[in-house]
Amino acid sequence: MALEFTQQDEYQILTLKGDCNGAERPTVDAQFESRLKGNGIKYLVVQCEACGDMNTQFLRGLAQIYKKLKELNGKICLINVNDSIREAIKRNGLDRLLPVRTSLRAALVEFGLAKQKEFDVNFINPFVTATQKVLNVQCSIATTPQKPFLKKPTDPMLLGDLSGIIGITSETFNGTLAISFPEKIFLKLASGMLGQTYTAITPEIVDLAGELSNIILGQSKIELNTLGYKIQQAIPSCVWGKDHQIKHFGAGACIVIPFETADGVFHIEIISNNTSGAKLA
Image 1 (cartoon, rainbow, N blue to C red):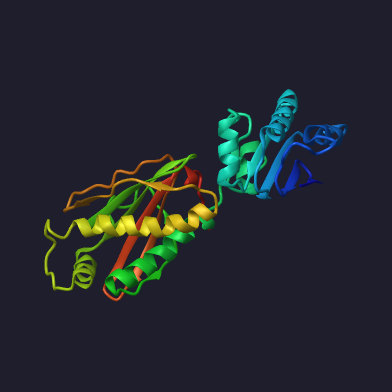
Image 2 (cartoon, helix red, strand yellow):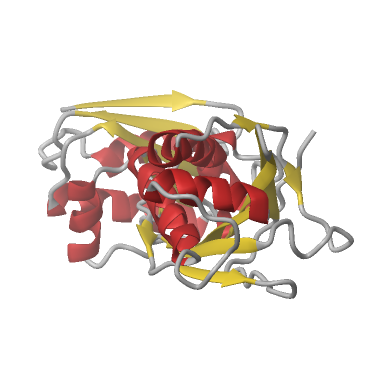
């Protein structure tokens, strides 16, 4: 395997290629310590995108780096980690010492070198794509996404007459996906999905909103998991009626994405720890 250190202004990147078996000489911690002398840099990002696996010996070397950085009030983060490496870290009890993050920016936020203030397009775009695809395939409804916005306390609590809600969980955050339809749009999609005409919302068809939120999250999860989010999903639920409320889970900002159709506009809402401090231009 190959180790390559790259120094930035405030941190170093250790790029790994191949399987890490601890046979490197000098060892990974010795190489790091020799680079640490005199440069004052106390943060290390370990780029694992091209690394297949790590054995216990190599992980112990990274743990030694953690201890050295801790003495300097520094930190280490691993990014683009595959399932095999995640399991090895857990198996060796090193979860706390070797934190895993989804991207370089997330690692810099962890270090305090960047602020988590920008809208995470990589997190939201899969939901947009999945919503368009699912409604086109399942309900024969064409949709056009509009500009997302952050839901403020002064905005209406409800953006539709019926909502499907599903929890989003991962190793690092919890949240909620909600899709809210005006009655007119929901009746059209129910008619298209079930193959018969509906003129009013009834208990027999409300579960479709939850089913759609489940399918949309399932589609989104495929792309999100390739980005390292490790999404899991809960059982969907539905709420409807004049005074229904969406109960979100998660501590982040509520991001709303409107979708325009031939019969009006519906909205999806996404909230999670991953949207904390989100800010839209």
